[in-house]
Every structure is written in C-alpha cells, then in structure tokens.
Length: 479
View 1 (cartoon, rainbow, N blue to C red):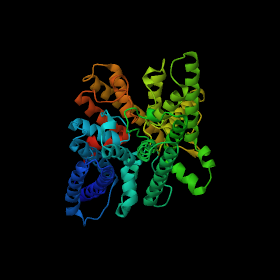
View 2: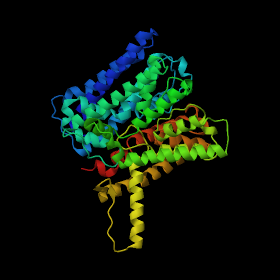
View 3: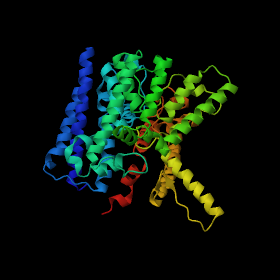
View 4: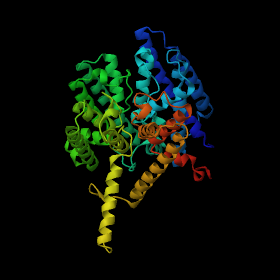
C-alpha cells in the first residue's frame, strides 16, 4: 500500500461511482415517490470519501505495476460492494440490516442476482432501478469501464484489464491501445442493452420494466423488479427474445467486436469456444426434452428450455419453480451454471474455454499412453496453446474445487440443511443467483453469517478466485 498511485486511483474510481447515485434520484423525481434521499446522502458520502483519497495524491504520476493492479482490483471491488450498500441501508422502504444490504450490493455488482429482498413490488422505483443499475455496471466490469473513460488510466490500464477480465487468456487486444479496446467492449455492451430494451418494449413490457429487465439480461445478472422474476412476462415472444439476448451476452464480447468490425458473421462460427457452447446448449435441450417426454410432469418444455439458457448464461431468470423438475434436471441446471458461458462475456462460471482445454489435455495424455515417444501439442483454433496456459487452467479448476469445499464446510457450520447450503453456494460462486432448498425464492431466510460467506463467494466467483487469492497470499505482501 506504499504506492500513492493506488490511493489516487481508488479515489478517482469512487468519484466516478458516486455519479451513479444521480440516475436513481432522477427516477425518484419522475415517479414523485420522495424516496431519493438515501441516494443524495450516498452521493455526498462517496464524493467526500473519493475526494479524500484522491486530493492528497492528485499530482502523483500514475504508474501501475502488475502487483498494484491486483491490489486496486480487489480493494475496489470490496469497497464498492460495501459502499454500494449505503442506499439499501439508508432506505426506510427497504428496511434491511447491514448484512442484507451488503449481500444485495455484492450480488448486484458481481451480476449474481441472488437477493434477500421480498415483496419487491412494494419498493420505490428508485431502489428497484438502483439494483438493476448495479448489475449493469458490474456485468462487463466497472474497472474495464474506468479504463475506457479515464484517459490517465492509459498507463497501467492493461494491468487493470488483465486483473479484471475473465478467462484464461488475457493478453489478446482487439486494438493497439487498451483504452480503445475497453471503449469498444462497452459500446457493444450498451448497444446490446438498448436493443434488448427496445425489443422488450415492442413485445409488451412497460418502459421501466424493459429497462430493468434489459439491464438484468445483458449483464446476465438476473435481478428483476418483481418477486416472480420473469414469470410476469411469461409469453412465448418475450421468453424467446430473452433467451436470444441472454445467449448473446454469454458470447465473448471481443468476438462481437471482431465480427462487427470486419462485418463478417463467419467469425462467430470460426470460434471454437462458441461452437462448443452452442453444442452444449443443443445437447442440453435434447436431453431435457427426451427426459421430460418419458417423465411427464406439469411443467412446460418451453420453461425448461428457458431455464437451460438462463442457468448456462448464469443469468438466473425464472419463469416457474425449476426445483420441481423431475430427476436430475434441477442439479443439471446448476452444473450448467458452474460451466457458464464464454470467456470475455458477462456470464460467470468457469467458462467453456477451460473445459475445452481440459478435454484437449486429457486427449493428449491418452495419446501419450498409446505412443510414449510421441510429441503432441494442444491446438486451440489454429494456434498452439502455451503450457503456461494449460497449467493455469488445471490450477484454476483445482483451486475452484478446494474453495468450493472449504466454503461449503463453512456454510454447513451455520446451515443445517445440506441442500440449501449446497445450492446456495453453487448459485453464488458461479454468479448464477438462484439456489435450492430455502433459497429457491430468495436468500433472506439464511443465517447472517451464511450471507457473509456467500458474499465472499460471489466476489471470489466474479474475480475468478485467483485474483482474490493472490491478494491474500503471503508472497504478495513480501517486498
């Protein structure tokens, strides 16, 4: 923490985040609900705190090393989760504890969508909008947005980009300048959100609901302004539109950029990760349809297909009670959530590309057993994969499993029901949102200590675990 650049940068980022308190104030004014005071108070607190961190070091030259970038990313995500809870905590209508306010804030900013709130319809529009706005900024990554809009982050921007981006391959740049890369990603993200919102309005949603659901869809966050999630708009047209946009949000945004820049859709099919993801969805659709045809229940197949897309993209929207699906299907949905979408997208999970590399490495080991003297390389697309990347993938999967087991044991020390603890952890660590047992509808019934554990799980899942583990490792703090 000796580098003053870290204080200056964190102060700048908090000042930028304080501006996000203004739209809810406008929403409150439009609906004349007199519920905007928590946002005014939060704006003042964030501005003062950000100024306090920035002002003493305002003349410091910004130079970020890789180690500093990890520190900024972890500190800012934790600080943002805590300070983002202020409007919930100060709101008389929300009327929730500090633990619940932090949980809701963490869930929003990590685009998880797990909520402790119920009777959402009774909350003021400003609070409902703020929840959606949190996941909108957190979906693609608020630090990537900062790289795009703060020119002085050009120095050290690549380090922040690597630390905050998802997936095992973080060195690919779409443009020569990382600032332009970040801008390109966010322009596509905003355009997709606008297109989604316009589509929802054209299919029957109110403008406010369309904005909220568009934020939740493209961020793959899954927050909704109603307790019933997406069930209020359970029409074939809206479900189909939502499935399409959830899928687009789970596709790599750099891939969107390349396809749009070159004006060639063939780039999508040439991407091995996307082809594998489409195959996974197709296989899941066929498996679910066949299983339901032999195990008939009062559950629409269209709802099952919707839930497959919703879970596999880690959005978490629901049109019915998925927990009553027969046999293995409820757990299968959570396995899809653990896998997640493509690297470089807004979805959570371990990402499809890691499974591809694991499969290729497994095939290589089989070939080595058959041909001990053979030399086999792992190819991804037309490029040989570096051993460093394959080692990192194995390390990530191993650490992911260990972290899951440790957090599960901690949860079981506070929650007596295994299904609830297991489902809640799968829903939060994957950033999908929904749980099992007592967490099917919301997480409000959990113990306070469980909510802190799950808040940590959401941040760890959003930062893909390693970023958080690097920060707390003893080697990181040695000079």
